Image (tube, rainbow over the protein chains, first blue to last red):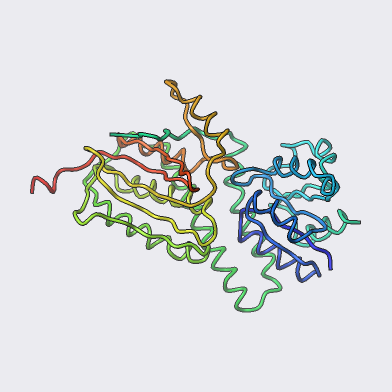
Length: 122
Length: 233
């Protein structure tokens, strides 16, 4: 069973996504902020991260930088899931940080997220 | 006395940030609705309640945003702050319960009256509580407190969410100086709710402020002119 760590401060959004992923055979863990997310990476040992961009405290770029500073985590695949329009950030520049795809929270279907995560660990 | 060890707040967020803040609840409701297709009856009931609470929260924000564009003709009256905070807390209790957070109101024995517009003061308290709900840790309480501060009445909303990073705080403090530039919000937020609250505070000759706590969390507060009507009686 593949493991996904969901880092999202919107608890209800994370719950809804986690339930759907669980039904699709994923093992899930939710962290509400960057600090807890970084801690959960060691404990939960995820295969992939589903990461919100705007988080309280340190936001997604801080997590991306933190992961790059650890050689064993630098290749951890990441899928961004955010309400920020994709035109607001440069996905190509984020690929070197392990970001495989960026999903729009407002328009993605629950199965899109499962597919993007599966593609990310392929 | 106003704002010792505190910062003034309220800066109009960028359009991108505004759009994010208004879009987020719509995206949330859509995701919950889609996910609920495969839920059990009990889970679906929870999902519907979350959609309703999210819609109400979003409506409060958009209505306040509309109201913030017409604050020139205000009718002010003496307001019993304890009673008003109790009403707000009661209305927010279902939302807090669903988020796993407690909300409490601490009032002094003797009622404190402020001079202001009831609708706007209520909206400010809702806005500060909403901010605390956004940033409070799960199971951490939200505390409303009413007190006198010199000739002012002060309503504060304490949360136990993540504090501003020291670097962010230093940046904000250096910007403050004698300039009117103000702290927007915590990182990751557009600060729309706080911007509206600061507009309303100014419209009532009040002031919004914030204190960051060493042991985590922040207190946002509003100062309003105190009404001494009761003392005269």
